[in-house]
Amino acid sequence: MKSEKIMSFMSIKRVEKEEFVFFTSKKLLKENGIHIIFTTKLKGVSSHPYKSLNLAFHVGDEEKNVNQNRKLLCSALNLNLHHLTTCEQVHGNNVVVIDEDKIGSGAFSRDDTISKTDALITNIRRVPLAIFCADCVPIIIVDPVKRVVGVVHAGWKGTYLEIAKKTVHKFIGNFCSHPQNLIIFIGPSIGSCCYKVDTVLAQMFKEKFILPLDTHQGESYLNLVEINIGQLLESEIKSENIYRSNKCTSCDPAFFSYRKEGGLTGRQCALAVVV
Ligand SMILES: [Zn+2]
Image 1 (cartoon, rainbow, N blue to C red):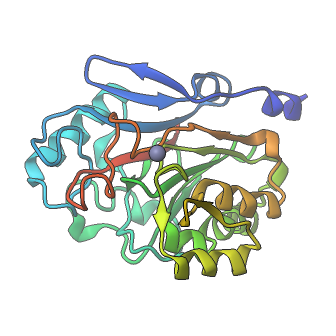
Image 2: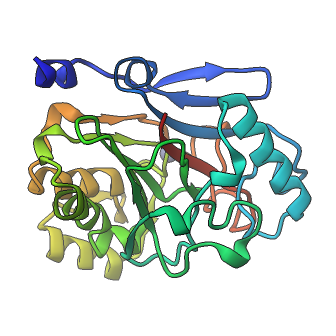
Image 3: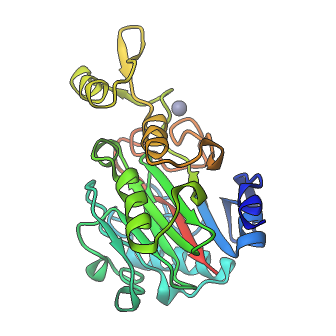
């Protein structure tokens, strides 16, 4: 009976609150007590070029604005900001399981965030895990049976290093998760419509992942979402358990886009918490 419930259809829906606008699965929250969030850049207090819901410290925004934006986010979602747990994000493939000692790492400053890490997992209740992106692929992994959540930051480097696959293996190894029970939510990221890459990089991906090259007018494009989905399917995730926002951060002005803004911009976040 339980697996039937897990199989039931989820979706990623837009929600507009007074304080901010985000994407979530209401059904996951209602049925499984797990809250997942993909924020937009709308509302918040930061000014140009971080306008306005910038949630990351490392981009050059004023710390007080980032703190205020995180406060808005946590109070609107009824989360404890002191428990917000983040990582340094170095485009690697290190995955860290959050235990009691690490709760709240990087909540108020980058100084004590979890270093050299791009994915976080926890089964501790009321500990929101967050990663920050502006074009990179944010992936949330949920085990509704074991009640475990994970957040993954997968830019081209993390994708190439197969961080999504590595995170799934950590769910299996550390929490005895069954991959067929895992639910995946893929948030807004730069789409293959806009992610033009040089031929060397395109060739590297083609060789490693045996991909057809996506080209228009002699230029190569990468579809990072599809490559990550490929890794998840190889890890025995069921295709019907993978949900995607289908939003391109470069096309849709509701999101920060590193590429579109020439590198100087804010970050939206992907957040997951066992309520
Ligand atoms: Zn696009």
